[in-house]
Image: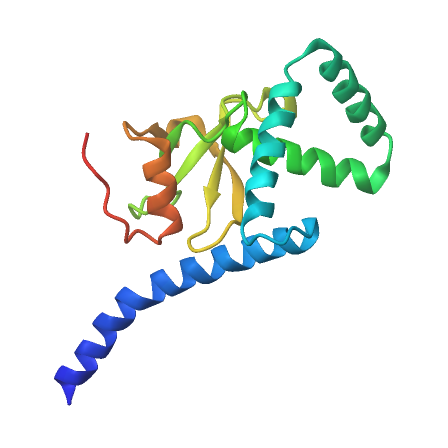
Length: 183
């Protein structure tokens, strides 16, 4: 009986990630297709990717920069919209924009001297503007989610890692079960 149970769990380990990936992809494709209302399955997704890429290309022109600056200015005056727009823009810029913030993986020694440490990403190397001298900010993502905490630590407790940011992020998000490839 235990051998059958073992086979079941091994099968689950193979089937679940494949099924979840296919299901989420299917939901995304069909949702985009329904929004755009194209009769060819997956065409809406391709059109969306193309349109977003074209907008990114067009945003590099001088005229587009003026238009985007005006849009930023407009959204900055609207209370709720300002919070939503600036937070989303800053988050996306932190991951993929020109102002990437999650490119400095660190390990932080927690207070108490018990040897506990936490992985994170250095986001601000100085907190002088807040009156907190000799401190830095570290974003600590949570495992199995897209949430995290921004923590302030004395700079002496923070040590940079010689590791790829993407590998550290995958390691944290997986709860430490992802295999880290040595360089």
